[in-house]
Image 1 (cartoon, rainbow, N blue to C red):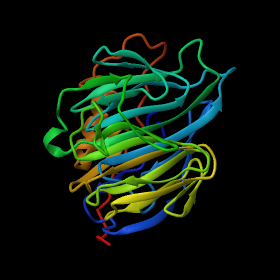
Image 2: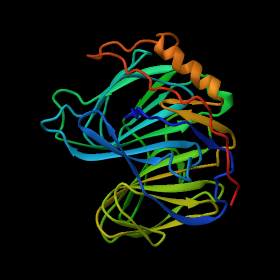
Image 3: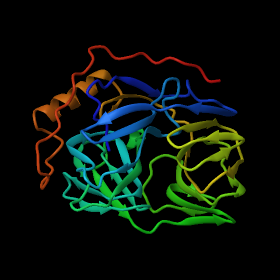
Length: 321
């Protein structure tokens, strides 16, 4: 899923102004956003007061949705720039098409990683026929200035490394965790991992004290550093941690997101990450006139028009705490 919000707001993100330089327990509630006719998502990032976690700049959690008699995910061709998208499923399938010619069905716990770089367009849809349930997360990683104009690319990785402990299996989606490294390409120090815990598990997950972290609850109930975290919520953890206590009250699924605080200030609007309001406005114009972002072939339907762009960019605010 991408950002289909027709009232998309400009957000200034990044910099160290919002980074908490010590361990905290900040529970984030989602904002519910309707995408299309049959899918509602819970948006955790950007959130009021919490814009990024490392380079992770956007997090939607959706499902589990019963789509047996529904079309499921239907996201028409739309553009991206300045970011990577991470498609991560617990149930269902997503058919990805993009303007580089990529065509791939992504299934549960397989990595679909799209690097937009300077410009790309893509579509996402539930295959026909499709599984009954759809449950997953869509995440974005902001690209640093030195790499944000790279050539667009799509990577698919069905086999990802694991970290195991009694009652815990951690699948490393991006970056490195406890010595296991994902094959997915990254441009800043970060980590993304899917954590599957069995009921009654108590364990500690090793962390990098230089990273800031958050945990997204996908299913079940887990106490994260003593805080109950229920599905569709996210616990921001700050920096300075060397380990993270976890206790599963039921079989549970979590996503661990972390990375070095993103030093650069970015402007994020709709499906674009840039540095200035003018750059965002030019990207919107390029999409609407059919230049720069290429064509997605094979999708049954038209392109997604861009919403109206607010006339004035926001000014960055905030201090390191």
